Length: 313
Length: 313
Image (cartoon, rainbow over all chains, first blue to last red; front, side, top):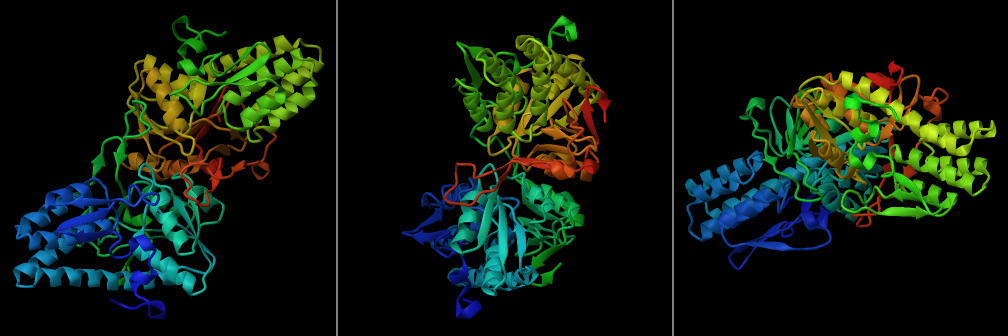
């Protein structure tokens, strides 16, 4: 475990439900994934007794953002303990979220290491330590971009790297406010981001998905910062639906847009991006035809920089 | 009543709940206002026994868009039947929705006519006929802007003028699709616009508030068209929160933005715009601080044209 501000680990600095064991954990041979769709009002952990069940839960959006990575790592470890074909297990898990290439590539690296003779327990444990160090390094860069008095607009649930950046900025005495779109239809902004930031003592405001431009026009937003579900080396970003709209509004108002990325996907190209399309949202339908593109593609000309461990691209 | 396509009145062409008597009506000395917050699943008419109660209902968003105008006209008529001070009644009603200057100016004109000796019943009846003719004339212009094969993005509940424009386009054989943001927090898009368009047989899709830019980027949106809560002679538009975001995205993608206006407010200036700010949305709060600016100001450089009875400004 790496150490960060005042000798505390990354895990200590995070809001409670982003800490290890609060996203997914193993118990009695099963994988339990905390159901983010029910947070913060209910704590429900979904039991997955097989790799198939874990893949199905990940596909059903039980966990989101960096959650699928953590759940998939533990699921692969359990598959190894059960003596399953790990190639098949990794393939099942990767297919559950085709846009999430960080998860797919991490599983591929672990698989290669295990084939090369590494103990599966050690391989997974190293992956966790690698990501903790990564969150720490990336959030140091994120923190450096935040200025005293900044209002920051975000989108969906920007997770470890953004949370730690804001937390570190606050601990350095910077005054920072965050505007959080509720992020329909699953409300990750309302259910995950806002309670997380509030739990860390950050001044934050919940807004509806169309209000970001309003607060830019009022001069209350100085930065737009999000996570990325996929980031390409040409600086194209793929992120939750709604991000494109705010990125365009940020450009219009001369506000920089930064996306955090755990790893740039150097092989992917803009033409080859696999976007997940879902059916209706399953609520408040009244019989309407509903469209739900999970992700937006944000072209590089709208992206000021991608924050990676190697610096800002 | 004016006649429109195939000899049918404007009222015949409108979706059922925009017809006279379905927005507000008088019964037994009371004003009843249909509660749009509960449509389309429940039909609940709020009884207002006094001008004060009518003003309170209008302020509480029982009706929206052009609804406050229709309710206020009938409320003024009842106030006259009760022998109230009409100046005071008009002032109470106008104050219920400070951004709605069409309602305020219409009440002022009627008040002036009554002072000049006109019978109150006749004055209100003339106002209704005036607006029917206005809807018909404006929607003829709106229809002329719609091209065969157009995808149109709208926002909130764009009411009579937009509905009639799309209906007339369809009756002329034009293929038209409408993308409707649900419009949080009150969901006017999901509850009013989508069922209205569907009732008229228009192909339409419900999307969340942040998705407009996505469908512009995909080439599926050719026009952005909304109503306006206020339109100034310098082409500044005030409309429901979220409109600014889509107007910027439309500009970015080279898509024209047209706003419908019943009457340009020639006296108002951009600096003097009174924007209503509300407290939290009263739902799914989890203790979060919520911001709710009812309206966006869309600067004239983002507005391709305002559709009025005099033509496109």
